Length: 279
Image 1: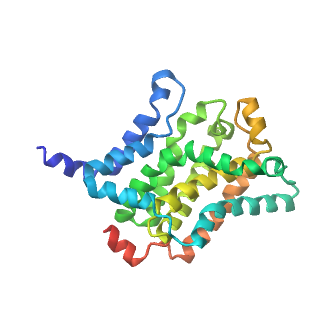
Image 2: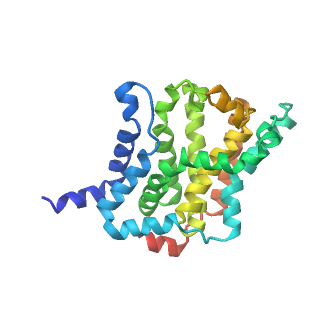
């Protein structure tokens, strides 16, 4: 009986991971009606890897989390790719008569860029990526391939944020439940981009997961809002999203990802060597 438990856990590892991530992250919400613990996915991912792969799995996770020698080009892609998509969306919006955002943060507080980047990293990717890309992506990609794995992760990732849609001070509440389908599509798109960079960097959880995820958060906060870091702190609330730009950037991202998927023959950078390694 004891020997069958690890085998059963390994067989249904992703389902157990999702359940554990939700159980941990939603704990404040279903106990007190408010709150959200962002660390849930990373904690769940580490637990599942430890239970199903032992020391070897934990060693591999640590190596992927520290894999920084991936080439300058992939650091640049991780840091700027999603930002360029947003800037392209802003340009389209301007051509259509929508005007430009104020770029207040970059005009007034450019010297705080490292600080804001670090804050968004602590408040998001570090609490999530040891789960989404540390455990879930290799697990699902091995079974279903990179495209299907990305779509599954994107959907689960989006719905995992559900409690935030009920917190009035959050950006998710600004988006609103009526735009939840748009948000889900946006998370699927981001998951596909992350899978591509993750695979092209040889499974770098650092660059293809944490840094890229954080860069996406950073560009969204600094390009799709008009507030500076100082005014946001003083007001005690999240900066207001430009919803028109948010929706437009999601549409543009879908088109970019479609081109990316076709260009990579739906493999998103997963090489034959990568397939063999994950098999």
